[in-house]
Image (cartoon, rainbow, N blue to C red):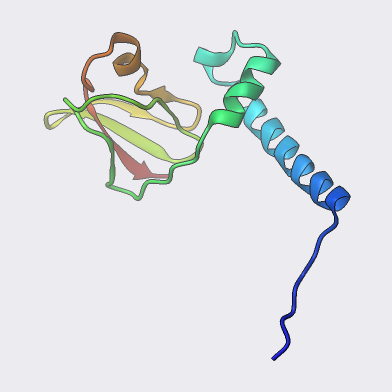
Length: 120
């Protein structure tokens, strides 16, 4: 049986990939510029941050971070809600544009609370 291939020339490929990357960067920059912690960054710094960001999706009820665990990630909520608890006590809620996890990175200490995804 024949082998059927699709091809894309270099210029088209580069144009599409660069355009997609630029659109992603612009979307992330618009969002990040509204995050208070990052508002002092200039566009170039936010662009670098945009390139480093990875999207993680959590189901409702899933733990994002756990109290007492080592912290190696900082989170910014793009959409949905999260709730922080210490033991069984709710201590904070987070929505789009809010962030958490920075203290464990800054202070090099274990997570101070458990944060759980709550959907939207």
